[in-house]
Length: 211
Image 1 (spheres, rainbow, N blue to C red):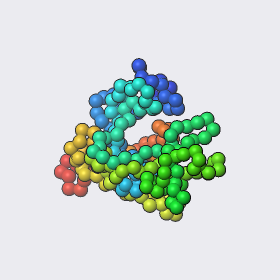
Image 2 (image 1 turned 45 degrees about the horizontal axis):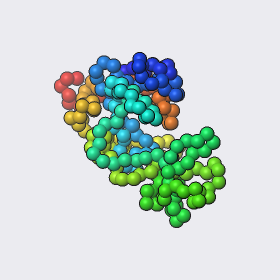
Image 3 (image 1 turned 60 degrees about the vertical axis):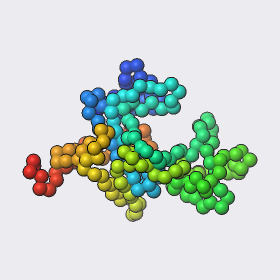
């Protein structure tokens, strides 16, 4: 896998604004990525099934070029971020909670517990924290939903469990078998400046004659 620390690490590809490089696979092999997200996917009981592949062709007008970091395909399901766009000194949300809606900034804002943003309804003081994620349909279905995951927060720590079939028969997934290595990394809103798990976890299935 390639990760070059430069603002424009790939020839003829857009530079990135954070200057922390890109993720991409340049050897023709997919790297599977199970991306659990505390707010965006935990209530779905899923991890977002993604992958690192070859750098894609840039699309005119796209907000963020992600090179080889891509999501698996899906049949339905989605979440969206609760902002229209950033301004220099503020963020305008897509939707505001209904007056009767009890919400937590650490939870998803229900679509039917909110209304489209209108200036006359924005009575929140500047600096108010609102939920940043909206569910507008059901959870992911299809290839992107192959990884079941759920976590609970207790005693200052997240306790996370994940599960997936050994072989999903998807060309975007790596089949799990003895000898396959896994790595763990914490992102925490850091773009690609995440932690690095140096020593991989090598799978060894009990009873596997290949061991």
